[in-house]
Image 1 (tube, rainbow, N blue to C red):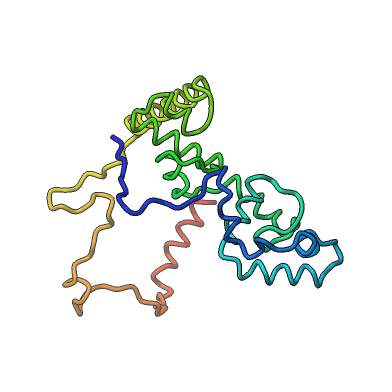
Image 2: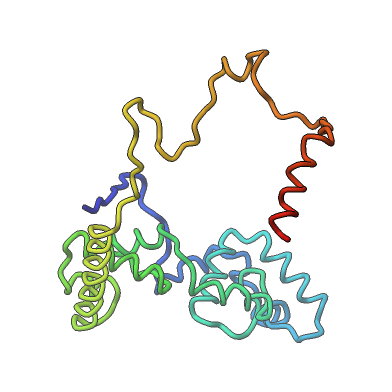
Length: 227
C-alpha cells in the first residue's frame, strides 16, 4: 500500500525556465554595457575587475536565480551569480544529482521549471501513484506522449517488483520461548542465592601440593603396562 502526502502550504516561488523577469531586479541591471563587459566578462588576469564584480554580486537580491540560470543553460563564459566559469564547475557536477522537492512540487502544479534526472523520476513516481494520464505527464515534463507512456510503464514495473519482493521477503527467525517465558538460546542464569552462598564451591588459584605416595603407585602401574 502506498501513501501520498499533501501539502497545503504556500505555493513555491521558483521561476520557470523562460522566466527572465529576475534580471530586472539584479544589481547589474541598467549598467553601462562597456562597464558590464569589463566587470563580468573580464580577462583571466583582471583580478581587480573580478573582485569588483564579486562585490556587486554579493549585494544582488537575485544572485541565486542568476547562478541557476547559468548552470541550467550551461553558460560557459562570464561571471554569473558571483562565480566565474571555473568556480561554477563543481556546481555543474552536482546539478545532475540535485533532488529538490520544492522544484518537484512546482513541476507537479504545472510550472515550467528545470528538473534534474532525479527530480524527473520523482515526478514520474508521483504521476503513477496518482494515476495520471500519459498526456498529463507529457505536458508536465515537456516530452512526447510515447515517451511519457514508456516512463510510466517502467515505473509501474518497478513498483510491482518492489511490492512482490516485500511480499515474499523471508520473515525474521523467531526463537521459541520456554514455558516460563525465557529464551531457549539464553545461557542458564545462576541464582543469586547460589552465588552469594558462603559455602558455595568456587575455583581457587592456590596450588595444593599432592603427597608423593598418592600418585606414585599410579605411575608405576602405567610404566608396567607400557613395558
